[in-house]
Length: 387
Image (tube, rainbow, N blue to C red):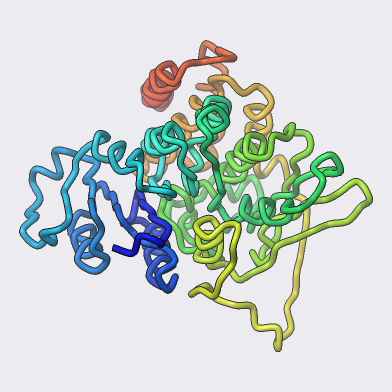
């Protein structure tokens, strides 16, 4: 074991972000050392990753699936952990310095919480940690001496653009969005959207849930909420621009009118590497922009009628409290209903709003209350769909 290497645990290593993170770590020339992996259902791939990278531990987050898996091919030096307890053990180990949280959905919150409670750096690719519990999570980081470095390309761009700047001179944050496949569709066309239409993203290759969120722009609503907590900025200083090329990942504007933007091809390995290497930069496997060819950059404001999720995100960023947990859970459930053919595309945002407006708001909830409301909102979506 290289004692001088920065020790990293990757939660959600079998997903898209996790796979890219392992490539970044392997290309780090020994600067980063992978000591822990976790996966949920793709356990054969988790074993393959363990064979390739030889971590100290792997964790299978679902104990039932873990009990059905044949672990004979797991390297002898690799300890098998299961359930949330296994994830917490890795995330809180004293020798671990950074925990990359790439678990999709509300399940990622507990990994984030465990790492920050132990004073770790969290390379955060899990939107739900801040959407559900932005206040408690950022307070925990400050109290325990942990830190959050964003992995999302948009928040990484903002994080980089703000480095060395006077925060008192910041005018606004501008999140860029590809606009997904429906940025020019009419309201009538949106009523006829199929699952296949929604999964045909023009720029990024992502999982089904995240791709649908991009199509509704609920992902951008969540990013507004994330930015509010990550950068401690009110929602009225956070704007969104449609940028189809996905080369400018976000911008910040200062009081003198200057705009600072971060540009790169749409390759997640760059923001992943920066979150793991911060405050340093080194050569890595991310794609580079070919400046020998011509590039075109387009920007336009999003249509609020076509993308009502954006206003919903602003409302939740403004109100805080329990709103984010309810919106996140409702959206996860309603997207599953859409993907299962039980609900239309243009019903996704109205269903989320209905559940959000129906819940008992609390301004300073406990983590236990947020988890309770997460369950409640999912049940409400089922009832809403049976109306």
